[in-house]
Image (cartoon, rainbow, N blue to C red):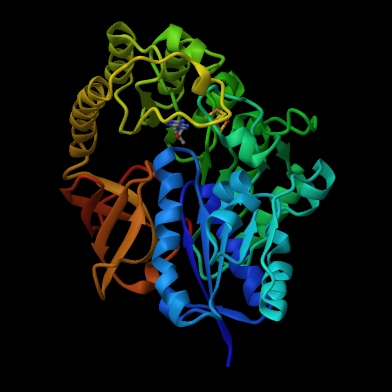
Length: 449
Ligand code: 5AD
Ligand code: SF4
């Protein structure tokens, strides 16, 4: 009988891509994927350590698998991703029923670890960081499974060391792939039916700087020219590396979606400096103004941390001011969480949790009302939607996204998959829209196919 695995993925898009590679590797050694731990011979968690809560969850989740292993001692349990990278061998000590641990640079060694666990029932952990050359050779080329949209990793790692952030410690230094390889991969994806790609990296705006490759803006131009590709996105951007050349792409490239995720983190100059972000809020706002000038329809989303050490009411107010001024379509808001080993974790900090929580609620209230204004404005409009798949809501229901990355559910036939269609927005919810196909012109993107 075929061996089976169950995989759960936490955290960012990097982990989503890593999980796709994990699936490919395990299928390559004769495993097939199942949808519950109860049915699996191997259970894997791909973990996130960006905040403490995410990290704690890993141990909670592992606890869920213990009774299954008590009943079926042959069950193998493994942990990968950022928590694995950070904790390494220690995880095997802390969790006696854990069989294998693999770090962020060691996914390619998973088959070896699994086979070792199968044959000798030997527990193993690999979390070494690899050198540049080896990593460049290991960039994942994952198989395509009937996808309309795909992530394509263009760079990995981060050299920024924002003072609160664990990522540079668990993902290692920045490396960028060659532009030729990226374009070839995208041409291959398009040949297999992919219509939209998101270029992915911890800080895509510093793509190629070390390697003296073309700039990220030039890379966007090259990808935009790939025939058959309909849409192009990228994530995540660091405001300090957002060049004028890159901003101008939003006015020049027809396939580049009119959305950018541009994490501001704080609106206070003082806090931004303590965060080691490398820009002032005045710089940030200038870049936003330029984005809106070259592309008036653009919508922005952001990340904000509330309760950074030593944040005063005045600092917090500066954040609220930026949020009001930019008018973000959405914001991911986080309560500061100290991460051992980072510079911020050593900063004196005497704010009460209650105060932090109150500020968090105030920010949320402002952003919720901003978001509602932005999304409600689409009610009754006809928008261009790239059809991505069948909606979870049942047969005859499709879903796709607008240029702003907003999900729209609407009734329609499966043969529309991969096409850009005009959809009239009839209802606006918190996180998605409901629409209906229409023949009205939408004045946005047009589908040549
Ligand atoms: N505490 C709270 N939020 C954090 N982020 C990163 N590190 C921390 C931390 N220690 C947030 C940032 C980042 C997003 C992915 O997670 O806002 O942009
Ligand atoms: Fe973390 Fe800053 Fe790097 Fe983003 S740019 S991954 S926040 S260190």
